[in-house]
Image (cartoon, rainbow, N blue to C red; front, side, top):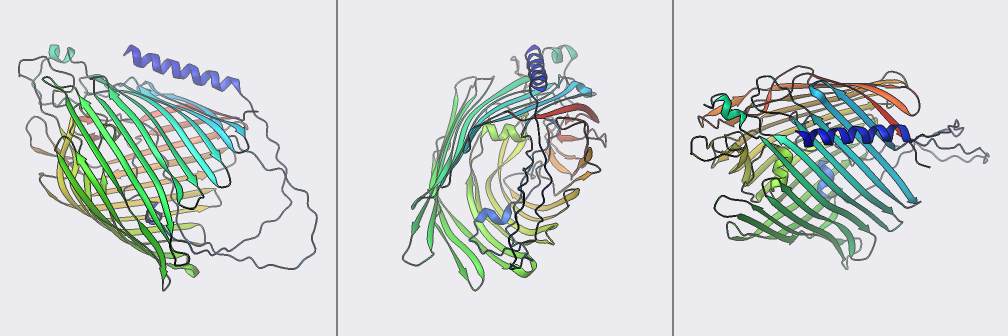
Length: 576
């Protein structure tokens, strides 16, 4: 693991240098201008995505990676209550207060048991008033040490993101180059695997991924072109597997003779290709997806309606399929402005590309050579409500009916022990591949969140689902119940605390040795963090992960690290 240790030491040294190199100054002047409550009621034409800024499934922290929970931003398209009444008054000259400037740049370093190390640094460098460069370094690593694991379970995960942002009145551009290097071990040997200690000592379970991608987004205010986004990605592992992915999504619009009626045309052009090294010959897969979803937005008797139809062509080189897919695109929203309450219904669909990279993001223990084929979401219907109350309490609830053809599910790869040849580290039934099935899902999602004067807040999400499946025994690794409870509390300007509590219900898994169905137990994962602000630049924190101390398995034969504690510091600064 010399390479992994080198990356860990390099990142720690980089962050320590960052911590000692910068300082900042802030001047805060009390504002003498009193605030007033303003009510703004504005009608708008919704998009399909606006109704579902809260995901149908909460983004749970992957305990196997031991990475921080990603922040999911949610926007509720609801009106804001107003109490503003204009009054005639004599103008009074007031002194303009200097706006407090918060430091956007920071460096963070933490360490704990299992030799866990977390390091992060972010720098934003303005080039002028309209543009800036950014750099973000993120690193997590562990030397392992899970009890009863027979193979090395250490890992490291390092990424560097370089970005450029340009903001103008009628044009915005965001671009980002990311370089990511990950190393993990296939440490999940089945306890029933008949293997000697000498054979175990000869297994090299390490595998690594390299992801280099360039993506950007352009927004324009022109007559027929609104901009779009693009993605160029190269992904590879250390088993000579490579993957290339190109996606271009321009957004077009066309005016009609009818006033205030536009035809929006989101276009999708996507090409995906990967190659896996085989024992006899290389396996090459490629998929092309192209099409558009023209739609119009209208208001009918107080109901905002967006209606369209998506038509796509999909070609698959491996299966030699050439098909045309047609999907509905319908969203209806009714707003009760007086009560900040919305009712919505939608029916959509789509062709979702499965890739080696996306599989590794969800399950770090996938094997090279998996079959990647698109999933056809024939329909995805939602009916629900959302809104807010007194600008402090937000809520959302909906029922979801979804039908997916060729849904990718994780199953173990075959155990090849005893075939008489030298095996790779993933060929002992300790890695995962894809099995495709037809899946129909009926689900309920509910969420509730509140925030009081930015001093304390809480968010609760509940997801329940039932599955009807064909072409497979079970809906592998899909739980029926998931909940997430997150909150924070600011005790004083110096002290604050935050926490996350996750519950995941039972899942079905396929045993790689007996090929029987196993039931993975439900689990609770509790994470807490306490921060202390030492001064305007420095803060210290203590973080606890999996404080319920459960040795649960997210994937069969892959127990996670039990209770973990980390102590760290954070330094914020401004560049002059």
